[in-house]
Length: 86
Image (cartoon, rainbow, N blue to C red; front, side, top):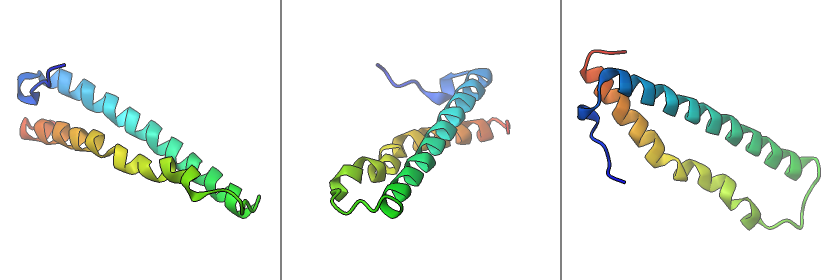
């Protein structure tokens, strides 16, 4: 898959992509908060002392794995701002 250049896209396409990525970011944010809540619940209420920390590495790796996603969202916002669109 070839990466598309943002300058080649129309303003409407950029706005559509931005809204789509913003919705995905909100979804991942809600999932992350819920996962952290479950993590805290399991540690404090259930007092899971025999659970390895390695079981929760994916939870802590989620923000790092979403970094390219947020970089692309920033590029979309920058391109829209350069065109004078909010």
